[in-house]
Image 1 (cartoon, rainbow, N blue to C red):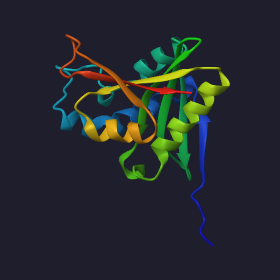
Image 2 (tube, rainbow, N blue to C red):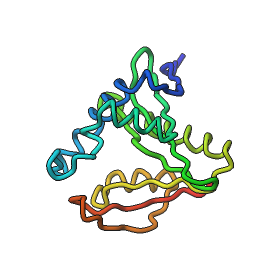
Image 3 (cartoon, rainbow, N blue to C red):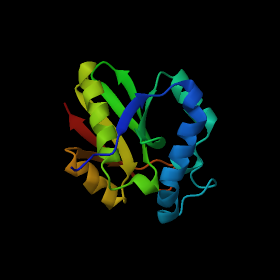
Length: 165
């Protein structure tokens, strides 16, 4: 009999902030290396995430969800709803040992279901424009590329992608 690993997606609380920050840092470290991002040229990159950032997200009304595989936290994602029709999928993070096992897709699917329950019409994400692997992964989940923008404070362009519910 083929058994699936036990997994749960749980709503996080402020008490989880340090664990969330650690997951986000670990999960984005390789992206920072790939794009030569440092604290000097991109201090707000997720690879430098702190507990205070996460607590600030909670205070702004952002909601976090944790992916628990067996007895380990394998990843997380944040949900932000700036208006009744739009949601942002933020800080999707999967720890390297758990990649390519469906964790990221499960977290995105959870956010889609959660957004539908709140009558959201569009889920929006922003990614590093040159990160083709990630862009293609999101395309595979049904996201479409909308626009690419430059920001003076960032050392890369940002591509925005949307998923219509």
